[in-house]
Length: 112
Image 1 (tube, one colour):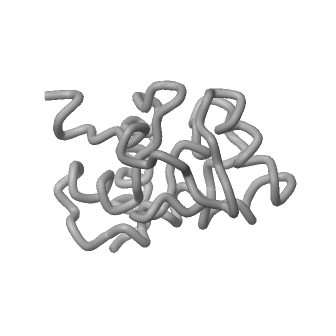
Image 2: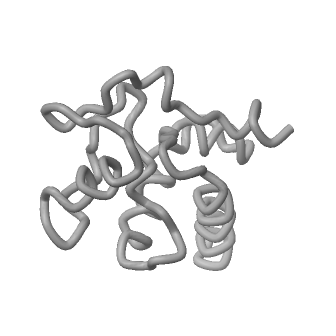
């Protein structure tokens, strides 16, 4: 993928992530699928790795397909991702979102 295309994809990812409501989470793969790039969950992860310091992109709301906080090491502290989720009412135990189905946000269903 060319650099310009990667930038465009990352910007599309950020646009979707900015729409995730507080107290909700989604997965890397769900975002990729919504953007028409099924199978590109890792690229979404790369985008999130670059966005965790941008206060306009709530990167803490993006977890893996099982609700695990796999991106937590890219935040200022290893507990920052969990702390942000818990401030929004999402309970996390052993780096996993509890009641994942209840908190899960699917842009294909919520935005269309």
